[in-house]
Image (cartoon, rainbow, N blue to C red):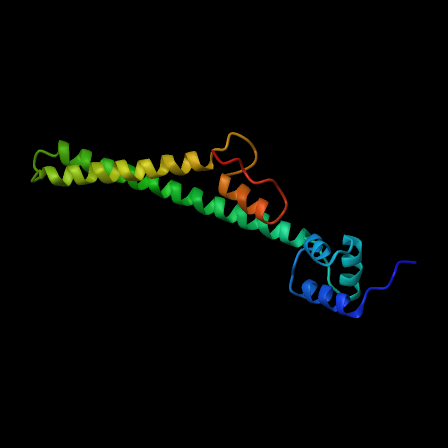
Length: 150
């Protein structure tokens, strides 16, 4: 039968469990096994199960990706509208053609198109892992490896 923990040690472990620290961190800090920490947590009606965190993270990742896709679609739509307006000004012989209007529209179209391309490049990882920011979110929750930086 394992040796009973000193009451002070057990109280310190319980406090760390209630504080939401990770099981292995608590075990290292107090020099006990992970299974000891898990047993104490169970007795305190606590759990180190992170399945809900994993699911919640997946939902956030999907929501953020959808928002980026909508924003990117808006960027390309605005670029097209600016481009079309500039084209109409150039071909309208009756319009009071002001070069700065055409220039401003062309600049705006270029900026929005560039933002669309940047967003597309950001989301293109070349694999099924998702965007780099999504990979970081998953890694932060302990359910994956962080993406390579470089």
